[in-house]
Length: 361
Image (cartoon, rainbow, N blue to C red; front, side, top):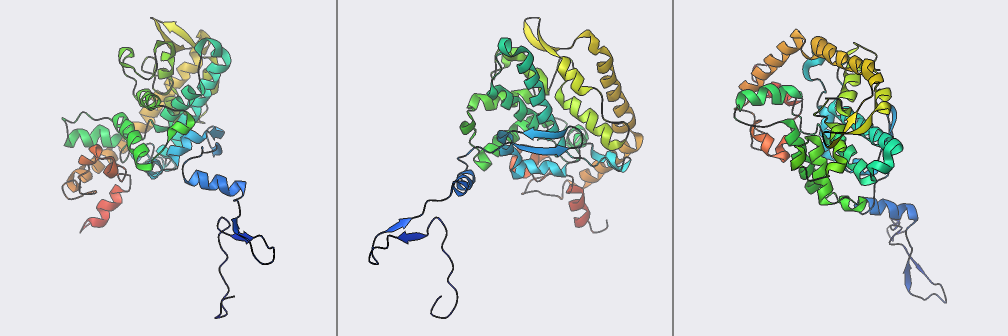
């Protein structure tokens, strides 16, 4: 105890000193931290790989996400996706459709890994897929919707096009910009996972695949990897596989089970016109037709619902009226698309901000 009777504060384990008690003398010796404490300190300093974690998902059940993906997930920039509804104003017609871009992105990340594992199991020797390849594809699935603005497609499809018709901007571009911004902002070191700068460029290419002659991430021998997250040849990719099931489930228009696992297990990589692409056997015709029928049904009954569209146009009108007066870090909503620090603050709650600042709501 202190002279005033107050108890002393115990020293930190790493600083606690013990003396070699021989006749009351001896030099101070620091106690080594426990292995668990050392791991926590290394993780806090960013010098240690993050572990894989398993999460529960209503669509895919128990899914395991590798530690490299949690480097992005555990950032403020990625957590913003929790505040962006997956289907915008659809919840005004289908009240349970309040799922967000966050769980969709995690679901796409998982399905991307499932498809890569399938190819490794069935065609591993001929395709020569590495662990780095798998991680890059999963990261692309995780980050593919990172660049969405408030109320998803309403922001880039209506709002930006009306206020900045000459602006050639899509949410895929913002997703690519957000990757660079997040890595720099959070000092993420992917080198500890074995990723090079070229691999990060590969992740960005997977989000919006360029023509084969312009690709830098991987060569022709791995061109099929560009079909997994965003398939520009058939339109059948893990992005659609996830949101078809998820949107049908949360709107209540279907069970959310459209033989996706069966389709993934049946696909193979084949050479088409000199490039390797993901192909499906003839016996998958009926399940694939079911997928496209689901897409048609979702557009007809959900995405293009007349009341949903009316809400979207009214919201765009409100945002256009507020646009000259609302500033985010000194920038207008349109200017935010070129500033990721400001863009990360754009979320569905922008409506509440407009409402709270209005004199006559």
